Structure formats: C-alpha cells, structure tokens
Image (cartoon, helix red, strand yellow):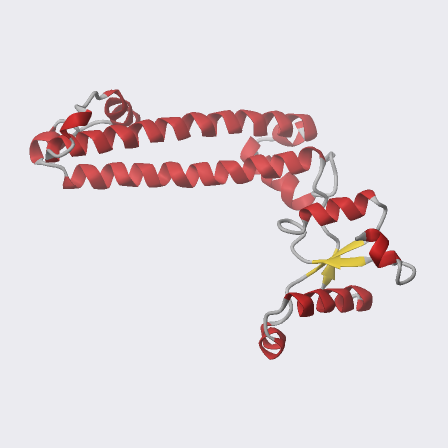
Length: 213
C-alpha cells in the first residue's frame, strides 16, 4: 500500500478514520514507516446524507480532509504503558458492567423464587448471599422442578459474580502497578486513588509515558 501511494508522487501525510479501532493497524504500520498520519473525524451528517454511505467516497473524503487540514486531529499513540493502561481499564469497565448485571439477575431471581427458597436467603449481606449461592450443590438432573431450576440458576449467577469479582481485583492490581510506576507522586496525594489517577493519566497525558506533578 505504501509503495502504491508513493507511486503517485511525494507522500506528505495520510488521513485515517477510526485510528483507535479499525484503523489502529494501519496507523501503526504508517507510523513505523515514518509517514505522518492524521486522524480524520466523521463527516457531518448532512454531508453524509447527500453523498450516501460508500467506502470509496469515504476514502476520498478522508484524503481531501487530510490534504486541507479539515476535520483532522493528531491520532493517539497506541503503544507503551499508557496504552496498556487504556486496555486494562476498558476490560475492567466491561467486567464491572457484567458483575452488576449478574447481581441484578440474582436479586430478580430471588424475588420470583418460591417462598420457601426466598425465606432462606433473607438478612444476608451481598457477599454472604453470593458465596452462599455459589456453594450450593443443586441436583442438575432435576432442572424441570421449579425450585431446583431456581437453585441451579442462582448457583450459576453466584459463581459468575465471584469470578467477575476476582477478575476485577486482578485488573485493579495491574492498573495500580502501572499507575504507581507512571505517576507515584500523583497517587501519593490525598483523595486521589488509583482509579482516579489512571483516568487522569489517560485523559491528560495520552501522548506521554510519564506524568510529573
């Protein structure tokens, strides 16, 4: 591709859409080749409606935008520990959402459960409830029975919650280690935890591997 582009003359820069997702591989390849890359933002909806959705037109629009310096920004770097921090944070976010859904499902299933089963689960803290459910040993062959089906489902949800809980703890440890290495002075301040420091690093200094405060 690079040879093909240079066959038309001197290559000043290229415009790439979605450098953080689908265009990430192309971004790395061009940057490694020493080519200036500009991220081209999404065109206005009105212009898109006029032209329609077409990959060829999108490529031409990206080239024109890069040449004119319109709708362009400097793409974020996708290497180093800042990128590692971003990936781990994104994974943690989805794990938190999945754990929240699992807990909601536990509560909803208990609410709909038969009285005899529901009464045994009253007055428990969250983790007591989850660990109790995960430790159950329901008869998996008796899934046609309503109470057994509830017990099987609750055990599955309890185990799912605990697995996600452990996964989040592991991710927190990795994120904390990166933050401690990149910005030890930041986390040493009062009222700034590792989660807040990680977000500050991602938001304020994506182009840098260190933050000096």
